[in-house]
Image (tube, rainbow, N blue to C red; front, side, top):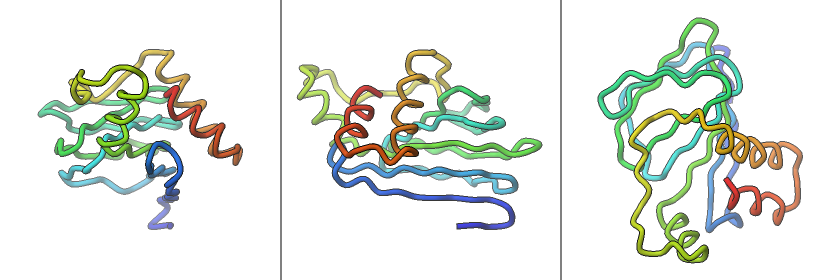
Length: 150
């Protein structure tokens, strides 16, 4: 989809972790009013920077970082000069609960992203590998392995 120079592509992955949605977007002009998602959202900034409000704070996720949002957490999105691009994945809470149980972490409760930006290199690397597998049209198994690692 294109809108005034913005480009958005959505992929549904029903076979991966019980169902994920992945968005690849290039925002040159669009800003986003306060909204929320029903799923966990993790985005890898691949160009520019994403400025947004999260937990009543204005934060900036620059190139090479992850931007996050918990389900139901109201947030915004603002375009800085030149815009920004990212890959994001929307993960249903039930998928994380199932994954936690399978990995032996059941009973720890739902994740809570206290901050809207993560710069930790290993987390960024794992999400980048997941998105690269999608871009390369890797096998469903390879994509799922990268999703679990992320």
